[in-house]
View 1 (cartoon, rainbow, N blue to C red):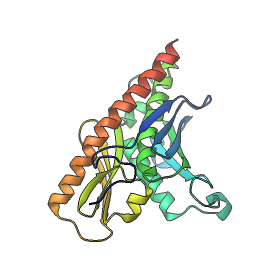
View 2: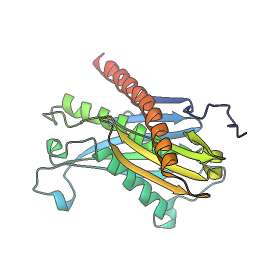
View 3: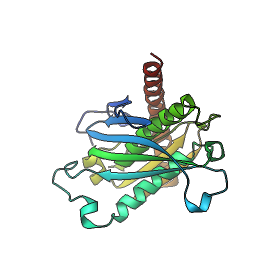
View 4: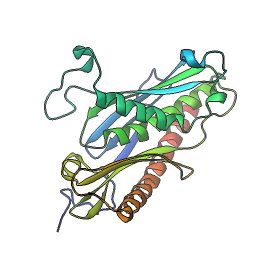
Length: 247
C-alpha cells in the first residue's frame, strides 16, 4: 500500500504558514511556507495601465514569477542571464495573474496597476499554487494600504482565491503533492478556487493511466477541502497584518 514519505494522510496539507508584511517597501507582501516550498510574494502599486486599457477608467492586476538559482537541488541560471523566459514561467505567471484578477473589481481600481511578484526561494512541489495563495495575501494588503492612503475610494477586492495541487498515485487520491509525489503521480491537477466556491482554473493531465470522471470529481472535491483550509490561513495572515498596521 502506498504511504506518503512524511506520514501525512491522503487528504492532509503540508504544514502551511503565511507571514505577512515581510518587505518594508512593498504595498503588500507575504512569505508563504508550504512544507519545504517557500515563495515570497510582493504587490506593487503603480499609476497607469497597459495600452489596451488607457482611457477606460479600468485598472489592471498582473503577476510575475521566477525561481531563484538555488531554489532547487542544482543551480539553474537566471532567466535574465539567458535573455528570455521559459515557456513554463510564462504559463505560470499568466495563471497567477488570471487567478488574482478574478478577485478584483478592476473598474473600482481605476487606472492603476498592481503587479504581484512571486519569487520561489525554495521549491519542493506546488510552487504555482503557493504563489497564488500567498499572492492573494500580498494583494489584499496592497488594497488595504491604498485605502488607507485614500488612493482607492471604494473596496475593489471581492473575495479570496487560493490553489492546491492534487494527484493520483497507485489509485489513491492525494492532496498537496510534494516534488517526489508530483514526479511519481499518474494523474496530477492544479485547482484554483474562489471564496465564492467558483472555480477559476483546473489544470490536469494523465501522466500515466487515464482517469475517470468519478476520479476527476474526487480530485476536485479533495482540492476544494484543502483550499478552504488555506482560506483560513490567508484570513489570519491579513488580520495579523492589519492589526500590526493599526498599532
